[in-house]
Length: 222
Image (tube, rainbow, N blue to C red; front, side, top):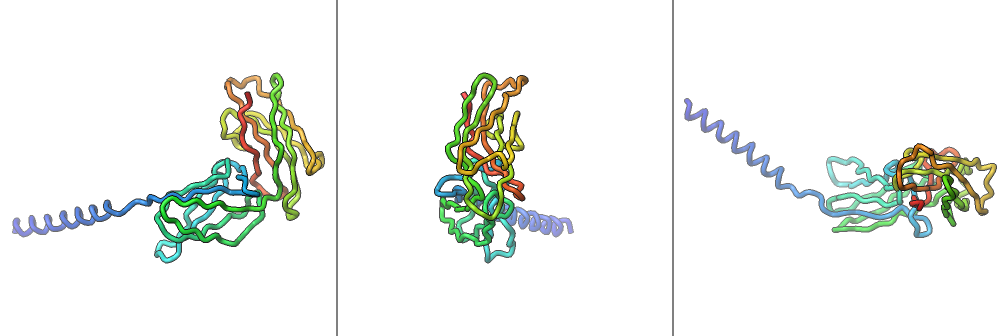
């Protein structure tokens, strides 16, 4: 009886070990899908990891979205298995809603740029520090007629990750005080309590009815 129980226990243990080894031998995803959110072939700045794309892959029992977060410089990346995917642009971003999916075939490292039509764009952005004050000069351009401009912002931060959620100082100007297509200036004081040796500045555009801002590139202020 003891021998019989020993044999049964050994078979069960071997089966568990074999199944575990089989699981461990599954390949991990190794291909990288990367790209940019672009307008006029230029990346669109956003708040870091606040917006995402969705990837969907048909033909599998576990049919769920794969979220792909967008970095503040408009780039994104995801580690995937090779295969065919549908890439979807999400609503609530500072660009026009677009429900059309993009067919993406991942084979090894794959690069795909995702075009969008922002409601507004920024051009000729520059920053200047004078004493304890930072001044931004920029032009707001209307791209889409679907939405109205609400505000523009100047943010200061301690790191390159600077936006409306991560900043040490900010100032805004209402749309009524801005002429589209013409230079605009905003100035903000560096907080006296700031102990960082580096300051970064970034301009943001708020569109009426849209929660997420569109941003300029985050710039280090010497």
